[in-house]
Length: 434
Image (cartoon, rainbow, N blue to C red; front, top):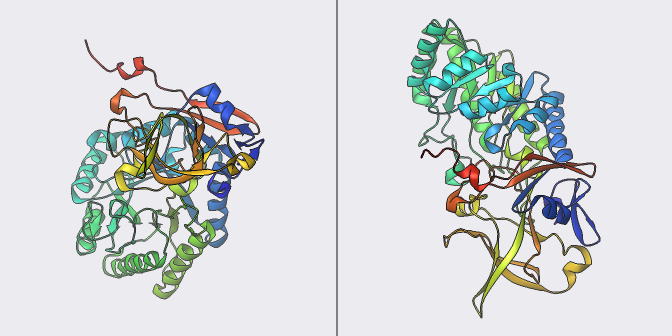
């Protein structure tokens, strides 16, 4: 199962190690639940994306999708790796600015940006604003006039292509809250061209997340580029920038075979170059927005086993000290995970298995992290490790039951550094007014 863990994961004396650090020692030092991020895996994924796209399409930008997980230390690491950043809220934008991320390399996405958020974006000089709807287009033009700015924008189009992923993760179909439908696209483009305080430089699409088959990208690129070619001839539109979005699927289970970053780059760049040749247009700058496929494998969640409930002939529940408060994905859309007992790896894992269900500590019957998994026989105090927890778990976490959010550590070369401390009970009340 080590292939699901970070690239540096190893077994040392029956203990799981990551980045040269013993996970049992990490749990003892920092407590659990604990999220462990491997620096080598993070940097390796960034390099792999940059090299794969730049080799095939030199005029390309890799913009990490901040919604998967972002804090200041990670933003600094991404800047060091030469990445762009795709943000979708004023909060994510504020984290980027606090980390001194280059604002010129920030793309600002989102389907309902507020006046305050757009003012922040203009004041801080973000590189591109992805305009999602007619209301935002008019609002942004008015704000730009007031601030004497002229932002560069991309229009987000919904090409009505089904990416065949979970319904909660699909964003490019006709019945979606995101973007301009293709019947609306020409009206949106001509309006954007007519607005004096807007510089329309390109088009954007995003089909969804956890995508394993790439034919949908080819179809969507064809639709968007055919539209761009038509608008160029009809309205003089200059197609300078194109964002293909993100969505590369990640294997959370050993039985799932995910496509590689190289295969993803082959499809996207190949189809863009094919369409530009057929249309006789200059290839635009290409952006992609990976999130999950950069951070998922890099992150591991550690939990401590507590009480158990064995219902003979039905199920054995094993409870951990975390759950849906720090990882709502299984409850939200039935996400599946593997697990390992971090202190019973190697030979220790061969001393008999039992089928158990891993339950969280929230007062909800739906707080089940993993249903029916075979693991070495468990005891209270064992440390359970869930791989592929680097994406969405932390940003979607909550304080349900007034549970403090977990600490996060970054590991590498045998050293661990705290990049977010554990919340305290006092933190939970800091916004309360007497």
